[in-house]
Each structure stands twice: as structure tokens, then as C-alpha cells.
Length: 309
Image (cartoon, rainbow, N blue to C red; front, side, top):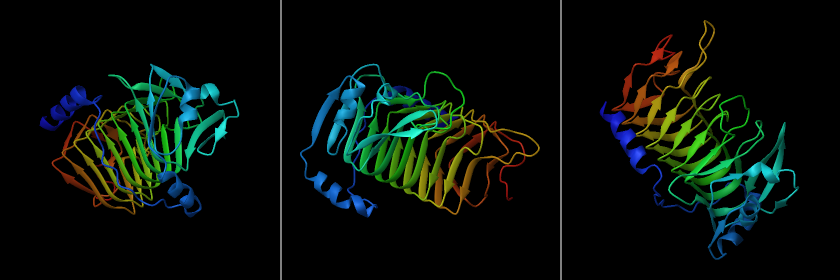
């Protein structure tokens, strides 16, 4: 299993080393925030090291690198404080509040240390972090989720909407969140050297997005509906990635796929490893994926490999 071994070796050896990213400057899509973001571009870049959730919130802004120092940050600790700024607020969900970061440009959130810094939220119906109307965001060396145990949630880990240039590196996204990444109207999303594991509904949902790349990532032990959802997207690639032990619900009436692709173009898997997954189908559409040197072994696609074959 050459591909499997190379992925495992890379992730074990390098998953928590920092990797530099070259970030393109792209004008934001949302017109009403254009003037704000242009003004923020002229601000001098700054780096702020934080040790508390309050310091983290105070540091949120454009042209800022926030360094998380410490073992963990429980975002929900200040959810009921009523705090907000021009770049964040706590948005109410069914069982609490989720942190929404909005209208910022050139923001980095980086965990310090050899292991990822925990970033977690309590409300099961909210996302750990939500981003809207932003340009050039980096998440690095973070372990993000809803808590220690896998359970029932309706909120995900990272919810990204109307954003250009979003980078995730050396990061763990885990359940009980419903999925690791929800991306809506996002251009240039790059996720490298990262894990999405133990999410309860799916691995990710990409909608109306383009130029999306996953490289040297592991997707493991996720369930239970369609797992990789790609709808109205273009140029989505998975390179040197591993899909292992993901499982959908199975019954005579189930209709779930490891990859569900609709109205999308140029979806590519290259040098990937797919093993020990269980679903009704590998993909809903035999023509939706381009497979390049992909090893597909020991899976249980109970109905057939492709739904439409």
C-alpha cells in the first residue's frame, strides 16, 4: 500500500510542523464591505500572543496574527457576555451562541507549540468558528471541535461563507460536530496536513465554491450520510489524501455515497488511498470524478461503486 504508507508517514512526521502559504490578494465578493476591507489593508500588520478567550476576542481584526499560547481555549466561556466588535459577534443558535468572525482581511489564528492548541465550543447546534465576508484567513496548528466525545450535534467545526482565500494547515477538525468544513461561496480554499475525524453527519460540504485543494490530509471515522458533498463547484482536488473507516447508514432504503457530486466540474483525486469505508456507493456519478493513481481497497459499497453505472 505505497500511497497509504507515504500518507501515514508524512502526517506522523510533519503534521504539526508549520508550513508557509503563499496568499493571493483577491477582492471580496460582498460589495457592502469593500470599502471597509480596503481601509483595513492599509493597517500595519501586528502579532498578538493570547492566553485567554477574552484576549483572543480582543485581538480579532484585520492584518493580525493571533498566537494561541496554552493548552486550550473554550470559546463558549464568554458567549453570554454580550461582547462584540466590528469584526466579531456571538450569533445565537438553538442551545447557545457561536462565534462569528466577519469583515476581516489578513487574519491568522496560529497555535503555539509542538502539538495543536485546543479550540472548542459548547453549543451542539453551533459551529466552533464561523467566518463571513472575509479575505485571506489562516488557521494553523489548532485542534478544533465540540468536546472530547463523539455524539449528536447539528453544528460543524469551521463554517466559511462568502470568503476568498482560506487556508487550513496542521489542524484537527473533529466530532461531535456534524462535519469538519462547510464552505459556501468560497474561492481558494486550501487545507493541508490536516485531519477531519469522528464527525457525525459528513466529512465536508462544499457549495458554490472554486479552486479548493486538500493535500496530505486524512479523513477518518466520519458518518453517517453522504460524506463528501460537492455541489455547484469547480476545480476541487484531493492529493495524497487518505479516506479510511468512514461509514454511512445502510438499509434497503438508504442512498448514500462516499462522494456526492452534483453540477460540478474538474473534481480530481490524485495519489489517494480509499480503504475500509462503507457506503451504498463510492460516488453517485461515474463521470463526476477524475481518478489518478487512486488505490480503492477493502471497502463495502453495498449497492454498487457508482450509482448511475
